Image (cartoon, rainbow, N blue to C red; front, side, top):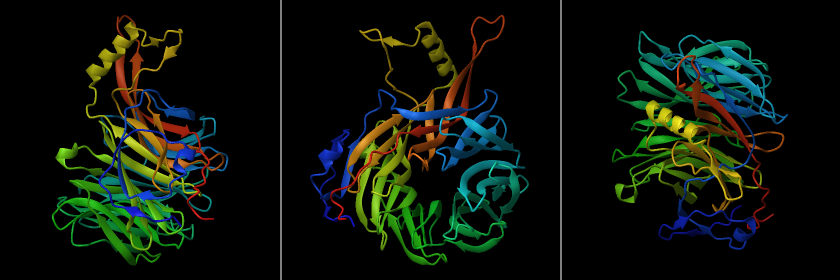
Length: 468
């Protein structure tokens, strides 16, 4: 158990620093709350491999993945034309060297989104959304695939008078059934409530639960806990109509143990949670401070007690961009890895991107140092992903920055099974130069590509403050 000593002191404003393991081992107290000001990266961090998946005539994005015993990953995502409403489903296996071993592209009728892949006994299940154009409503789609990505069976979940949007998918404690978190909107989108479904391996609905706490609410994630119960994250309106973070604890039969609201600033949302050490839950999300404090979303990381949701510590990571802690994973020693999306405030237009590309071509796009070596340019615009490592007392150990082309966004963080690499599943903005015969200047096409990056494993760490 973590030695719990809450220090309710004023918010601490810290300049960014990476702390060594030895430097943080001496003091075992826990600062309850800290705000960390993060600087923009100047250089990309090292990675084991990365893979860009795309074709210049299509948009692609990866949304979810699974680690394999071999060290590779199975990824799922979308492929679509930018002017089309519906998408195709992409399923691919990428080996430990970053190469695609196989891929399957499935044209699912009326599919508009793909959200999550999970592993069952000897196959995969994928969740997405399809659209009923006549009713202008969405329904949840679930497909079952074999080990090589072939579609075996599929089905949909709908509710009369409601539009369903999937949030997360997980296998339950048996490893055979699925639990699904969603948000149900009325057709005029004037009200919204979280919903839970349990499905068997054939897609039949075994159990349904609607969350109606008396206020609008949405769900973002669902995770199975060691006692076979569930923890869910999301957002709910409080008595003042403010959007606040929401955490729900249920047993394996969807009965409430507790639920708790976490108001922060103007609004807050909890995006992901994982069971942590013995008796705790680690949570990632975002919070928007009051206008006097900057007004931009900050990444929010928190550890709470499993028994009642009381906070042990919380950390805010902010910068000149909008930030959110999109996903979080934990190793057996309590080292937390947090994936933070940093979203640029101003996106470049196609014309601006084309002008930048031409300027780079004219200037060779390189900065030459005094010793003649090429240096990385400072990354001043575009989206990028930051990967943080924190110890069980919330102290920042490392910060690694990853960006690609015109910008990169992470949608899920997973752990590779073999080497322990942390794998970012997401998307990147790409610029293609199209040479046209007889045309002096090439055409510049902006596209979104699927992006998978294998970051180095988290440093081996044993917290001296946790009794053996």
